[in-house]
Image 1 (tube, rainbow, N blue to C red):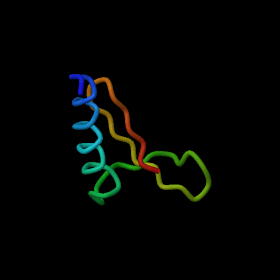
Image 2 (tube, rainbow, N blue to C red):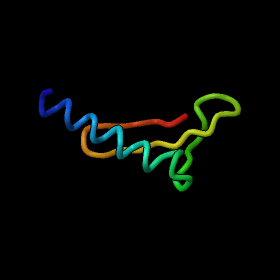
Image 3 (cartoon, one colour):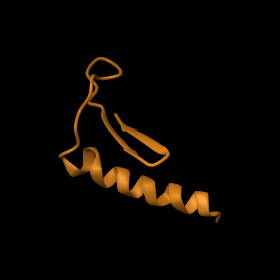
Length: 50
């Protein structure tokens, strides 16, 4: 596994922990009707829990 791939795996774990699953993520305007979008960004990566 490359350094980039390891960073991505760690980011996804962190993002899931800090988004919807945490119950405390900050919501933004939904991308579609009825959705609950919670974004997470860290470094070069961006995650959208929808």
